[in-house]
Structure formats: C-alpha cells, structure tokens
Image (cartoon, rainbow, N blue to C red):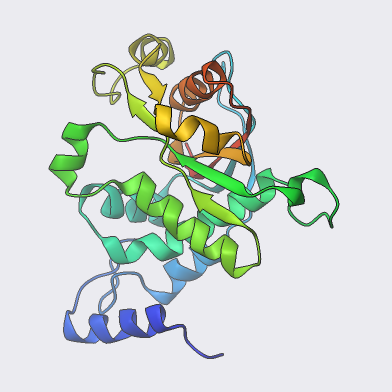
Length: 235
C-alpha cells in the first residue's frame, strides 16, 4: 500500500528525531505501528456516562480511554505532540461517521446538507499554556478524513466561554455540572452558519458528559439542533 505524504513525513521525522512511542514506550517512533494500528482499527460505539446530565445528546466514542489511547491523547493535548493529530482525528472521524448515518444514499436528509463539526472550546488560558487548541486541531483532522471519504464536512468553532470556569480535574459529576452551567455561548457570527447543516459536537474525551451537555444547551439556546456528539475516547 502506498504511504500518504503525512505518514511518509512521520517516518522521516522518526529517523531524524529519534523518540519513543507515546503509547507503549517502544523506541524509534513517536507512535509505533502497533499503537497506530490500534487507533486506525477504532470500532466506535455508543458511550453512556453513569447518571448522564440533562440534555446530553447521544455520544459515540471511537475507543475506550486507557493504555496507548490515553497516552496518545495526553501527549497531543498537554505535550504538543502535533503529529498525533491525524491518527487521532481519523479515529474521531470514525466516531462521527457512526453517530450520523452517512452511508444512507441521497435523498436521505442527512446527505443533503453539510456536516458541521463544532469542537468543545478550550479556555483562553489553557490555549496559551498549551500553545494550541487541541480539540479544534482534532476536529480539523477529522474533517479532512471525512472529506477524503466524500463527506461534505467542515469545522465551525462556534462555542466560546461566557465566563470563567474552574479546572474540571478532580470534580465529581455534580460539581462538573455546576461548574459548567451557563458557561458556554455561541458566537453571534456563527449562529446562522450552524443552521445550514447538521451539527455534531466533538471532543477528545467524555467522562461525565457535563461538557457536552453544556455545549448542547448553548447551541439549543441559539436555535441550533445538535444531531449527536462524537469523541475519540470514553472514560
């Protein structure tokens, strides 16, 4: 099989910049063939958090959160391993594809309008600290994968924080819901665009579902229907 230009570049960089696999620690590659195959073989399924918050849309996850998947997501998000975005994005695209019946032929209504991926927003401080917006980067990689399969898709970063929120780490489900209640808002310039297609909220990870429920609430308040949510992994 012919290698894509991106994968060929990855192979060259692994030779020039020796590293260890973020998933399993094996030498000579940022993502070894076995861990890459794990991401590429993602078999998405419905994710059902315990005691889901009100308003949570149907959520589909490409993979369980653990092992090499967890390490790859953390490396991309917290350590700026940008070259992991394409394989993680392809896994996310599989979850989106499962969430939406894209395989149905026209004139099915899901095929008549574009698919709009709305990423969960990072706070401004988190983006500055990390040097990038990881969820938007994954959404763009997923969109590229979907377009490669002939699906009309685009990223619409329409959500923003309307107020400060605390770090979610260490908070239980109820505390997360309180922390995020009313925290998100749809940017005025994007509202009309969102009503022109089918909206899927995307994120890297779902735990309690509080973030995705708040995103759906903000979009609904702006008159936007959320078809589903899709994530790379479910805890």
